[in-house]
Amino acid sequence: MSLEDDKTTLRHRMRTLRAEAEARDPDAAGKLAAIFPMKLLERYGPVVSAYVPINEEIDPMPLLDRLGRAGAETCLPRMTPQGAISWRLWAPGEQLERRGFGLLEPPEDAPEAVPTLVLTPLLAFDTFGNRLGYGRGHYDRALTALRSKGRAFACALAYAAQQIDRVPCEPHDEPLDWAVTPIGSVPLFMMRNRAALAAPAPDDGSAA
Image 1 (cartoon, rainbow, N blue to C red):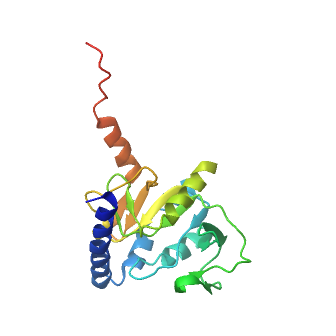
Image 2: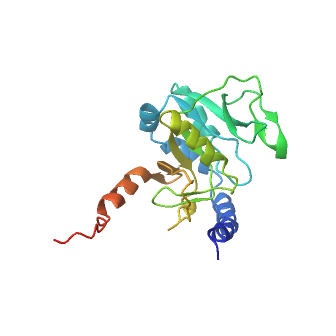
């Protein structure tokens, strides 16, 4: 089975698990917003991007409202005609426009933004920050572009059940730095660095 087949199979399973998690915890979005570590805004803000939830994605709007009241500039993605993400300033309560596939996005005349703290949806993530999305690569390309120009701290918003042992990854996949669930935070970049330090050094073939 190919890596893409593995991802496809995992996506089907994680959609079911995410739906079950949403049904079990209808107050998850409020819980997540209440325990979100504001140090992330202090260190990696002030421009924060979120998303309009679809299907069973955990709703970031209570958190976005809290961050906006704390001084964050908030924005949402808007797809370009070329299929890339552009970021547009937006605050809870402002107008959204229904576009392709029924997605709600900021209007075209909303000012562009460059987020430094990116709140991402997903299907699954693992301890090393590997992220399973929907297979279209929009967030990977967007994070690559942001990180090529400066810092961009990627923080997943998810149910605890969406953390799994291993997400299949490819070289172009952009890693997450952090994840927040309704029951706590997962400092992924710290865990990734710890694992790298613990890994055995490569054998260069030289004799002792």
